[in-house]
Image (cartoon, rainbow, N blue to C red; front, side, top):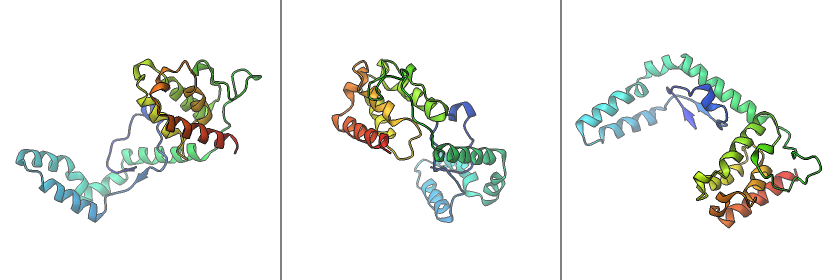
Length: 193
């Protein structure tokens, strides 16, 4: 994602957000030209004026330069650096709640997940969301399962896979067999690294 002249989110809202790869950069001349052309193509005079007014700071080089040293710009820079540090520092994967339990045995509840740090906090959050009855159609579970397979995923892939295979997870019914199979394979590969 790329950010410029945007207000940063509150720190409590971004705590578990994946900001890996975040770029903070001004618009290029070509992007400014495209933006101006897009604004001019709006049919309604009133709407064109509203959009032009709101986006005018993005087309003004002086305002863009002023934003570069602003507190908002510095906040985004800090967020980007902390995301890079978070995602580039490896963490130990979770340990089962019961030391004698197999790591392949699904936990009955996500509360038993015991890893600490960012990976543990992210994984516990996703495990709690994964099987909520409110999202029993499997859409959220599918999204989490697909996102967990991304190379920069900062949580515990194995724990996500285990929870999705737990019969108590009613939302798992809505997840396609292909997504489940891909997740299981990715978790197996990640576990053997």
